[in-house]
Amino acid sequence: MKMVSALLLLSTLLGTPAVPSRRPSCYKRALKDHDCHNVPEGMEDLRQIDDGLQDHFWEGKGCEVICYCNWNELLCCPKDIFFGSKISFVIPCNSQ
Image (cartoon, rainbow, N blue to C red):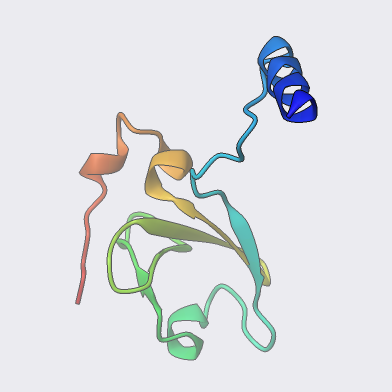
């Protein structure tokens, strides 16, 4: 019990949370036999966001995760992290 109390006190003093954050983070996905020009044909769970946002894709059925294609890998992040909360709501969502 003293050890748990000491850890909580130490983490409070250091400014780091004692419990890991539940906030989703970014991750990378390798494109094995694809590149940015043929991503939609090769991966059915990705949809291009808009013609004006080249190499940007929605991941999954909803519009919560955005992936950016950089050569032969995708960087995927929640939309609020990727664009910021002030402009993420204006990004068009094509959920079909």
